[in-house]
Structures are given as C-alpha cells and as structure tokens.
Amino acid sequence: MGLTPLFCPTLTAPIWWSDVAIIWPFLETVAQAVITKLGIDRCLAVGRHWTMRMRWKSLRLITATAVAWCAGASLSGAQSLRDLVREHGDISVTANACGGLSGLKEIVENTQLTVEGTVTLAESRLTAEEDEVYTEYEIDVVRLFRAPTAAATTRSTPGQTELSPFIPDASRTRPSASTRLRVRLRSRYNGRVTLDGGVVTATSGSPTLSVGQHVIVSAYFDKTKEWWVPFGLFEVRKGRVLKLDARLQTKDYESAEEFALALANPPPTTVHVKDK
Image 1 (cartoon, rainbow, N blue to C red):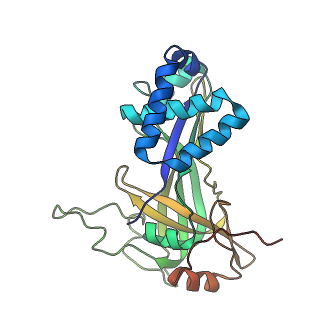
Image 2 (cartoon, one colour):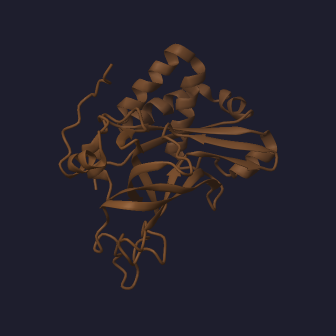
Image 3 (cartoon, helix red, strand yellow):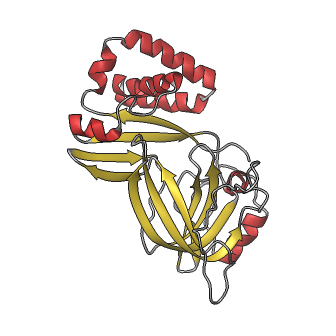
C-alpha cells in the first residue's frame, strides 16, 4: 500500500500554554528540527500561513505537535483525555492531514475497500486508552466495488487473520437479493464525546457522516490500531456521486456507473477547479 494520510494532532486545554511558555525558545527550535527531519514541508507551509494570520498562538500549536512527535507521546501525555476534562473542562483536539494532492488515483492506491451503502450507525467514542476520540460507522452495503483479498487479510501466524471490515456473521457471504453485507469503519480524530466535567471535541477536517446517509466510501486497514479507516468519502444524491471532502482533487460523477468506471481506471490527479 502507498502513503496513507499523516495526521498532525494538537491538543488545546486551558492550562496548555502556561506549561509551554516557560521553555518556549527551546520548543521552537525543536519544532523546526522535527518538522524538517520528518520532511513534512506541507505542514510547515500551512503552519507559516497560520502564523501570518494568527501570529504566535498558531506557531505554538505547531510546536506542541512537533514536541509530541519527538517524544513519541500520545496526545494527552501521561494523562487520559477523561482526566484532562475532569481537571480543565472542555478540550479540543485538532488533527491536520498532511501530504500531497489526493484524488481518485490515490484513493485506489491507498485503500483496499470501496463500498456503496447506507450509514446505520455513527457513534463517537474514546479509545480504550482514552487518548483519542474516534467515530465508529456501520454501513449497510448495497454495492461492493472493491474488497481485500483473502491473502491480504491473513497474518503470518497460522490460524490468525487481520480484522475484516465486514461485521461478523455477515462477512461470510457476498451481496445478493437475500443477504446484505455490513462494514464497520472508524474515523480517527473525529467526533464529540461528553464526559464527567466537560466535552472532548476532535476534528481532522474529514467529513462527518450521518445515519441514513447514502454514501460511497473507501477504506484502508490501519495496522497500528487494527481499524479500517475511511479515506475518500462520497455521497450519492439523486443518482449523482458527489465528493464530501473539498480537499479531494476529483470531480463529481453523474452516476454510480460512471464512478465505477473511473474507479477501475482512475485518472491522474491534477488540481481540480470547481465548475462555476
């Protein structure tokens, strides 16, 4: 699989900047070094743009992100998000996806699953470690465009397999007139969870799906989380296939059939100018 989206998470809480301000000169130096070392030039460019508009506050957000990477720490460090909410009230986590242009070609290269269906569950939760907010989706499948092969979902250890995107008891059959697949996906840094003492809100710029929405979704398997993560979201509206993420460099399609043809032979990705 090719390059999957790189998330750049930052945490905002009432006490955050008072902790950082004491060692600010050192952190700024570390931030520049880490960003350069990781080669995330686009992140740096975005950070500079924010700095022009929002001055020092945004630069501190970039710096805090870089220090978290350098230390290999979770978003909340030693404390869980639940503990942070108890101590400081509402907090927000923002993650920006960094990388090059993404179009239908990159979606196909970086994912193994594409389905059309209706969202039947959209529920935000904390991870077991309580260090991240995600939204879990379940989608009743009406059309299977692409699916992982048996070889791709088999681990090296005999008898063990990677988690299937299909919900148990439905994953053994293919769509037919009498049976319907259901997939489970988890969108990272996405959602709103109410806890004792406040609310944790996580945003990554990715579209949020709603129950009842008719969608076409692609997904890849995140081995670090053992989750299937959506990457490339479209809505089917009045027969047309419309991209939900404005950052995707791809056109809208007049029908699911036209989309299927493009998915089978994706065009090169170029900057797409929206038709007026």
